[in-house]
Length: 356
Image (tube, rainbow, N blue to C red):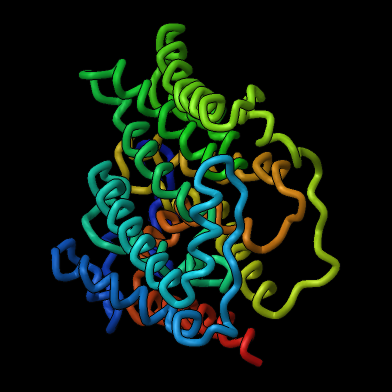
């Protein structure tokens, strides 16, 4: 009997020697805690976030100020940089809330194949892989509103309240762009993602664009009233538009973070069939939108003056899903636990490097 069997839909079955099991399982000491979606397990994500960010929280010399690159909330982000350790405690709480939102989103949309808290765990892990990720930044604030937009985006497959859903997708994507200027590209991501999930009509695009334009109009009117400046805020977003410069050198922390994300990107591309395996067609379409988001991170870079390691954080949301699925699908618990432990240690090392 031939050993290279295939399914009826054309994808190969995993072989006996593959590290990916037909019935995935997880084990070990840490990952096992987040295997079940219970309230207590969810609350454990907060102390986990505090531990993995402990070096930056405890030692001021390990801190790096977050990037400010947005039309909205720039003054607030700048003010948080004066809070000392309070800024990093607040950012940790915000990341915890985002992790809970990610878990709820991916579980509700059935994008994991089963119910666990791995996506939120992976998000906390990835957002601690470099000290520049850990403080309050325009990007960190924008990720919160972007997650709200994703929740509405995945609901376009439902039949009820479609007009409100499309309007709110545009609204929250626009707010994300106002908080973090490179997220202006999400305008095109939203249109393409909706077309990937469901056939778009002209009225659907009009409803989406109405929602997208509204925050810009409201922000412009408030700006006129408060500052008497009639220049639209959108023009400020394109002030630094162009090919960003690249730093002449990277330190060890930068190299470690870039290497981890580069390796994860390669694994996600080569392991695409493993990531979408055993998912229904709707879940596969939603996962494809996460791959589209990674693609749209490329034109986002043109809003930057310098392409630093801070920018990698824009892909932490889709990578948290990809890494969670890969960890869940690893056949041997010791391998998945070892991979998690290695990433955990790298996160601590990148923070310690600033103390040397």
